[in-house]
Image (cartoon, rainbow, N blue to C red):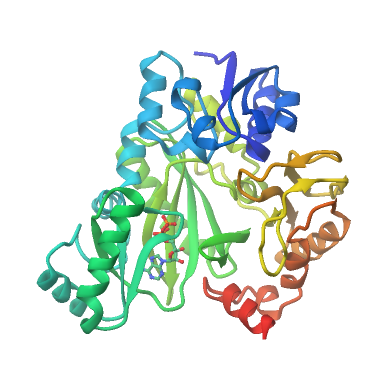
Length: 440
Ligand code: ADP
């Protein structure tokens, strides 16, 4: 069924991203917004705008009763299985994965079990939840210390404890359980081998919901601070075309077997040439544009098409990976102490030129609200080679002007002068270690 109108249940650059894809397909858009976002760019550009509550996200963007409709984005309700079910129960088309898949992948123990059954390589560890200490000791000894104790309902880099030796296992498990209970309302924990110095490499997958699925290659998101991604690139500097095809096929086969619908990301840690599944995100991700840049596929358009019941617009054979793309997340914050910096943007100039994309709702005179996360723009640059991409990215960062608030543009500029970054020689620990040295 052809979709005529889409309600965009999100804010910021991703709301604008969806509006753009919709208008290119001749579809009307409805923006829903809190009172704090009445002046936001996506609200101005949408065909219709509805205010759904006060600034606090729990009263507006997370208020299901106020938003019964479709949200092909990330954040807020995009991974809420209950919301997806309510939407479908009201005969509104839900642009996103099937509710049961959102639910399964939202529980990490369930997700890991499902991934294992579908043939994805796992981090060695417990088969499921662990509550018995003797069993925990046996598992930890088997996989070898250090191990990591993780909350089944954890997320956003929270609910994890690293355990170095058997003496601490019982105490740390108890702590992890009670912290998980307090934070997520679920004390369930499980155990994994703690990898010392891995990279974070994730595969973009896409399914039509009827058993057809493809992969769109990987993204390397190893440059992280506090488990938050800072800069992402595609392809990964360490993955060969053969390895991409091999693991990509494992991922897309898993999606075919579960008849997955829409965009998904399968996240792995990568160490010593091996992939280890950690979780699956059942939504479009912030870093999706680097994949779009090297494949030429518009992932939001694809989500809308699949929701209309149409087939995938490309087959795996047709899909080609060309060149290199890097995304810098631009946040309104101090570049080195990371204190948030909301407020009035007095001047704004977006970088431009060949192969430069800026996804942002910023404009001069816009007031960045203090209520939401600090990401205000994404700068995505493409080049035929990684080296060319980096040169262009440096040039584009020079051109960006955001005045009135602090941004992390200087951090990106400094990062792009570090030999390890230039050589692609970094792990998930690199950025924090570099920041600590820099502070000395
Ligand atoms: P979340 O859902 O909170 O993002 P993840 O399972 O994706 O949790 O893990 C987040 C981050 O924690 C990973 O990117 C990695 O930096 C670290 N991590 C998770 N599991 C392990 C592990 N087994 N060994 C080492 N680091 C890990």
